[in-house]
Length: 617
Image (cartoon, rainbow, N blue to C red):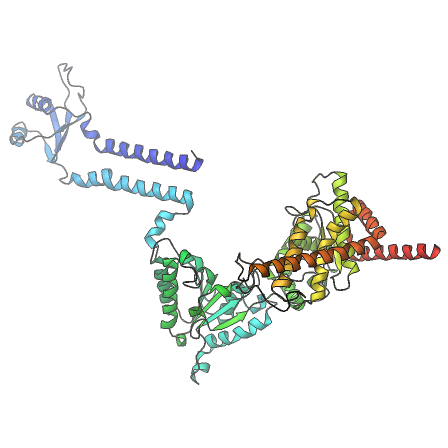
């Protein structure tokens, strides 16, 4: 039995014991009651006084006895007896001059409280406590299933403004019109203009879509309704639609305001795309959202904003004019945007004077706002562990490596032979990268294990942001990926499993050249991958090909030809520069880390030595 189940069982047993105790408490008057016949005998002997009579019970006090009555144990003490149907009792009491008075005539109230309401209340409290321990009070939520579960921020609670958002200047310019409408609606209504009902923020994860929506509310000074798309859908049919209605009704009451739905793809997937995986509750919720967007008037100042990183799977009805008809791209920042983002996140961090944020922006291509925030935070934590007075460039460089490759594992024990293989493997990557004209320059080479499975790494940094790649550049990238395995085979005469990830990436890149980019001399300019893939996510969906088996064989042959040709080119480069390869591997074994400038100086010295030796010969 699991500990949580055992805990719940103990609470259930405890509640049963409490109920039994309450039942006993409600009936304790009858446990030691005096028999009515004994009461009548004592009454006849004048030994009863101060009676209280109610509908079911007679309570009183026994007088002191001059004789020993062994059968009466309550001598001189209060007693209780169950009242029976005795019409002459009142006359007997009056004849003997015994003082008596009536008791409460509604004992059912006490019984209801003690036997029913109090136990029920205890059970409810125990039930709620147990369900919270089991998973957040799921049982009590059933009472409010149709209510909005998101958060609402009042106008003064939204502290985020455009000053807190950087690197997305074009998106901010697009949203300025929304802010202007919320601030001065009469300016647009004067000419009969209508603002788009919905604004869809589209972009990769971590680019600041949610932050940008909050900044719009903060700049406009209006309430902000925030809710995730997954919070609408429940296991009970009709709950999501009720939550949509509740959300829009509350927004109408607080207009002007902004409704923000994060992760819209969880709610707005295309209907009917796959009947086998259809979800009636989700589709009903989506239908209700579409109806609400058609039913409300933007002139009242209610603006709907949503964010997604998978716009290709959204239902077309969501994207038509009159709904989410304005799409704002929140893309990865360029070098100037990354520098601006670093400055925003550096406001609360004490930086050393030598820190160059522009240089850091150049060394973080492809990073989004969340990555840069993580870099700054990791650098601050690292500087605190090292007891520095400020965050310097070494800590920021280490933070970038940690984000890219993972945490260092200096304590991992490896045999000398394995370290030698890793050193020459990384030396092969670096040497090929520095030998090819279209490859990105090497920034750092290390044989210190990082992350989950990385035993070493070679980091390349492009000299500028790139949005297009030529065929020659892609072939050079394939060659760099194959450089490590080729170096192992050249130096040791055998290969290891360390090149597994390199082979996967090289094969994927070569296949994309053939099937997506039309860069094959054999197959020509033909795109064979026509299914929609995630626009902003790195990995594609599993899909079936829609071309003939003969074409598939030609694709495999062409991919194999590209890989073989690049592998031969790499082997030729490493064979020609064998001395530099072995020297670089030896230096990596000694120092473990080489910076890019040190690597290029070492290779230049090796080339100069080779030229001098050739002239001497």
